Amino acid sequence: MKVLLRQNIDRLGRMGEVVDVAGGYARNYLIPRGFAIGVTRGRVKETLEQKRVLVVKAARERDGMEAVAERIRSQPIKVEVRCSTTGKLFGSVTNRQLAQAIEELTGDEIDRYKIVMDERIRAVGTYQAAIKLHPDVTVDIEFEVQGEGFVPEEPPVEAEEGEAGTPEHAQPPPGGWRARPGAAPERRGSTETGEPEGGRRARPGAAPERRGSTETGELPGGFSDSPDPGADSESNSRQE
Image (cartoon, rainbow, N blue to C red; front, side, top):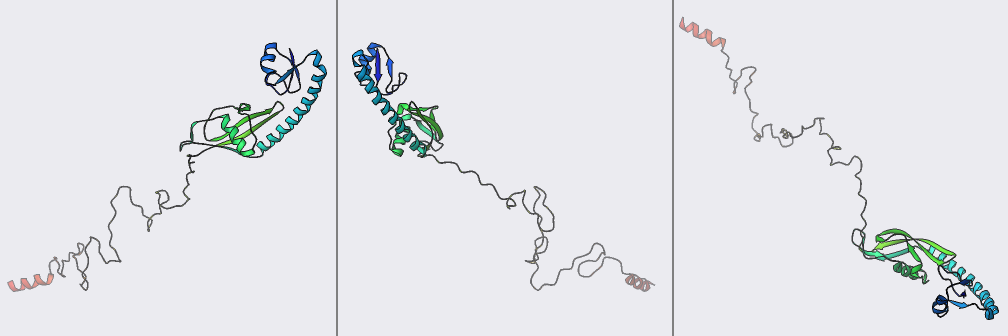
């Protein structure tokens, strides 16, 4: 049976085209729903007139879809969903949610069945989709999925060169010497506190302590442990 399509029908034809379909499909579905009208010999003139009207209507509809596509392309599309702190969604983003986001942004109602997404969206990020607004108008869009509970990680801050506090950049102590790894700290006297080596302090006003010299054999107090030549000669004269 031949029918004149009054609107675009996927996998069947466009508005204003005359197509041949099964009689039951035409009488039970297309004609009762107003999607098409039957073409008969007695209605040829009426059919041709309706066809001209539908062709003009189809052109206007195509121009309108072009304008909708331009509005969609000109604005960034964002879909906000709930997610974990790591960016994983509690579910997935559907074409219904994308259609609602587009309608809120542009004010144009989009049939969700005309939106095709190549992958299931389960994490925040940027994705692509195709919207078939018209048989002659298809718009490719890029949209961003934003998570309500997502906290993006900040990149680590690199330490500045020459920063102190690390063994590689530690400056050597005055004098150029370096302590051996694991060695106990060397204890030295302090010129600021007046403390001599060994940890003993000099009493204020006391004379400096004289110590014996192992090189000269001198004892403390100015005495010497070496024999006195004068003393020996005096002893010998007495014995005589």
